[in-house]
Image (cartoon, rainbow, N blue to C red; front, top):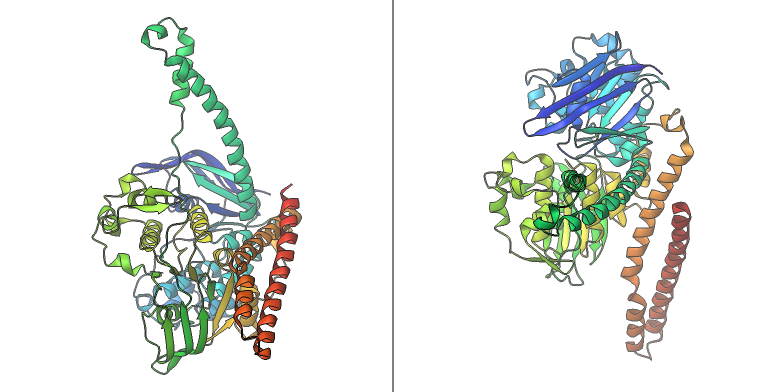
Length: 600
C-alpha cells in the first residue's frame, strides 16, 4: 500500500485562528477516510491543501508522480453562462462519455432532470450542486476529495452515492476523503476517521460509530489524567496560599513547579449541552387533517391526506426532493391553506417552526445577535435553574465575543443554532423542524439530538439525515406521489417502497469496502446503535402509555352497566392496551439485556 500524498509539518492560519499546527500525515492507497470536526476547525482547509488549491503557510506537500486529484468543494467554479453539458463533461465529445456506462449512469442519476443545454446561472442551488457532483464523479481520479457531498441530495440519492463510492475503486487502490455531517454516510462509506480540532489531526480506525466509541474512551482517559493533575494542582495552590511571608522560605523548585501547573491549565471547552426547557401546556387536540389536497396549477402536490397528530407524538416525514414535505408542514401549521380538505389545530397549540431557509432570521440580517436576544424574556428555567438568553446561547456553542456580530456575518452552522435557540425560547409545545441539521457539524448534531430527546411536546421532523431521523422520532411517514403512508420499518422500508415504484435506486452492491477488514466489530457497533435507538423509542412509548390502562378502566367503571356492547368494547380496549404494554415491556427487557451484555 503506497503513499499518494505526503504532508510534513504543515501549518496554516486564518485571521485569528490556527487551523493546522505542525501536522505530518499521509494519504495512502486504499484509504477511505471521513473527516470530522467542529465548524471552523479546518476540515475544508485540509481538503483544499491536499488538493493543491491552497498553499499552507508552512510545511510541504508531496504528491506521488503522475497522480490526479479531484475535489468537490463547498462552492463550484462554474460560469453562469456555461451550459450544464460543459460544466459536467467539459469538452469531452458526447460519443466518448455516452459510450461509458458508468459515466452515463452518473449523469442520468444526478442531472437527468436538468436540461442538458440549460445555463448554469438559471439553475437552482440544488441543481447547480448536483452538476458539480456529477462533474467530479465522471472524472478519473487517483485521489477524490469531497466536501459535504450529500448537500441538496434526498435519501434515495444519498443511498445511491454511498453505493457508488464504496465500489468506485478496487480494494487497496485509489483514496477517498469525505467531509460530511451525515453520520450514516460516514459509517457506510469510510474505513477510517480523521478528527480535526485545535490545530491537530487525530486518526481513528473504523467508521463513525467506531470513532465515537474510541473518542469516548480517549476522553475518559484524558479525564482521569486531568483529575490527577487537578488534585496535584489543588495541593500546590493550597501550599502557595499560606501567605507571602511563608512563601519566601519555601524551596524555589516547589514554587516553580506550582506555577508550571498553573501555566499548563487548559481552557475549558464550551459547555454545549442544553436540556429540557419549559413548554406551553398542550391540550388533547394537536392537529387533525381530513382529506387535504394541495394543488399548484395542474400539479397536485398533496392528495387526500388524512392524519391525526396527538400530544407527545414524535413523527418524521420522509420524501424525495420536491415531494411536498415543506408544503405539508406549512399546511399542517396553518401557514398555507389547502386547496381542498380541512385542517384543525388545537386551541392550545403553540408552534415553534424552523424552516430550511431560516425565514425568521432572514428578516433580521442587519441585527446583531445581542439585539435579537434582547427581544426575548430575560429569564428561562432549565433543569430548575434560571438562565438568560445569552447563557442559553453559550450552551449551544456560542461565545460572548459572537454577540456583537451581525446575523448576516454568522456562519451557516451558527445561524442554524441561533434559529433553533430562538424557536425554543418562544416556548412552543409543538416543534416543527425542516432540515434542522443542515450546516451543523457532528458534535453539534449530537447536542441537538440530546436536546430533542428530552423535548416534552409534539415533534414533527423533515430531514434527509437518516441518523437524526431514526434517533429522535418514534414513527416515520413517507410522502410518495402526494400520498402519505406510515412506514413502520423506517427509512429502509421507505427506500424499498421507492425501489418498488421504479425509483432509480442502486442495486445491492457486489463489493463493499466495509467488508474488507474486520467486519465483525463494525457490525457490533451498528447493531448496538440500532438496539439503543429502538430501546429509547420503546422507553418513550411506555412512558406515554403508562397512564392509559387506568384511564380506560375509569371509563369502564363509568360506562352504563346495562349497555352490554359498550362494556365489551371498553374491555376489549383494556385487553388490547395491556397486551401492547406487555409486548413492549418484554422487548424493552430483551433490549436492555443485550445492551448491558454488549457494554461489558
